[in-house]
Every structure is written in structure tokens, then in C-alpha cells.
Length: 357
Image (cartoon, rainbow, N blue to C red; front, side, top):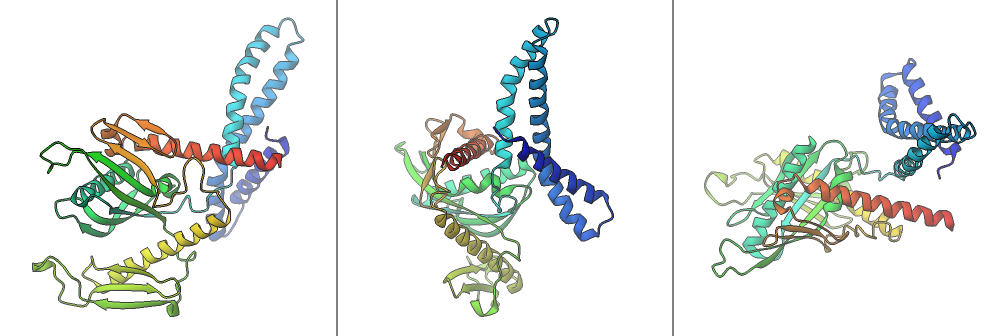
């Protein structure tokens, strides 16, 4: 049970932020307060709902001693006994430590793995699935780098996805996605297994990752292409090397050297930020492990089985027999919501263990 004092602190802090917003404050301070208010509002509303329900329970118990009110009191208590645990759990989830990156935009990288042309086609299926899901969420998708497959799909593709709470929902998509189906080129009807790798990198604000001039080397060269009008006649392609880590990002999609450099630096910042998060996570032992897995890109996380029309997420042993709807983006949210819920449950359990210790 969440102590009354903890709920009171939440409400007092929310009221203080609201009061300061209503006062005459400088514009930059108002922006900070507005953001804090938006984050605190659902927590404060949940705290008030829980406090009101607890008070209603106390009132109902007092009414039990009145013969004329006892029947109504018992009925109300029965409803409250069902509602209170739900309110407690909702409040506990809202009070869980937040992942600082949850509200950041992301760079999604999808790469064909084992399986040749079929893997590239599957990478295309996955990318379009994320595009459709993002559209349904009201997010913006902007391709950054594209390497098309020989017969369709992508050898690799990266895109920036921006909007509210993007990383919070997409972070569990990192890993190896496996597909089982009969390729269109297969004449014997034999099922093939292919794979694609997905990386979801939180996109840091410029202030989060500072790139010093002395730490990066920028090389320019002539972009290569399939021939004809797509071959650049100027040195517009850019290769950025982060000297301390050895990370290399190459970009040649744009005809402008300036635009290629900007995109390369954007990807480099995201990869450095992701590497720093990985290091911090390892220091906190198994915080990202457990039932939703580590998010390691070498880990097989999901299988898309076409003959049986099912999708299985191996981290939480959840199978949906609606493969088409998942790939269309409509049912992907069911998998994501289940992963988020499992992660919250694991964090609540860990919190309980800390309290016992």
C-alpha cells in the first residue's frame, strides 16, 4: 500500500507547480513549468482518485454501524474492494522511476540478416510495419539512409521517428526478428527461415551528446551508385569517424555534402548515446534483463510464421494469430503494450524486493 504521506507529497508538488504557473513568471521558466505540469498531471489525478477511494472506504465502514445504511455500505465496500487494488497498481506504475529517454525521438535501423533476398524483403515488411504503426500514433517518419535490396525490400534502411513517447513504445523492438515463409521464388513450396535486425536508438538532444572537433574525423568522397543520373560527379558523400570509440558512420543519400554530414552526425550522436546507455545499464546489473529480455540486437526476440499466420514474441511467450494485422501495424500495439506491461510488472517486483531487503 502506498503511504498517505507519499501521495500527499505528490499532490503538494503538483499544486505548487500549478500555482507558480499561474503567477507572473518569465517565459523560459513557464516553458519548464508547463512540461513539468504535463508530466505531473496524470500522477496527481491518480493520487487524488486513490485518496478519494480510500476515504470512501473509511466512510462506508463507519456506515456499517447504522442499521439503515448498512446494506448500502456493504454494497459500496464490495465495489471499493474491487476498485482499490486497481487504483493502487496504477499509482505504483506511475511512481516507478522513469527512463529518461522515454520521451525522446528515435532512429530506427532495419538490416537484412541471414536469408539473402528473402531477408531483404522481410526487412522491407518490418520497416513498413513501423511506418504504419507510427502513422496510427500520429508520429512523423523521415528516412535517413536507404540501401535497396536486389529484388525488393531493403538491405538496410534507417529513419528518424519523432513524436510523443516514441522511444517508450519502440524500445522493445530492438533485436533479431525471424520470419518463416515460402519465398515467391521457391518452386517446391519449401518454408525458408530468414532474419532481419532492428535497432531502436534514442535520439539525444544536442546537449546530451557533445561532439568535440578533436574527437571526430570527416572524410569526403564521391558517392557510388547504380549509374546514370544517380551517380554524383562531386565529392558529396561523407564518412564521419569518432576517434575515441572507432565508430564510423557513412552517408551518401543526399546530393549535398552539407546534408550528408548533418545526417551522419545525427546518426553518430544516437549511436554514442545508445552505447552510453548500454554501458550504464550493464553497471546496474540485470536491470534491462528479465522477461522482456535485454534488448540485445543479437537476441532473437520475435518470429513471424506465415504458414500458421502467427507472430510469437519469445521474451514474454505471447503468440497472436493475426500476422497480417501485426504487419499492417494495426495489431503491433498489442505486442508493444504487453511488453510494456511485463516490464512494469518486473520493475514493481524488483521494487518489492528492495523494500523487503
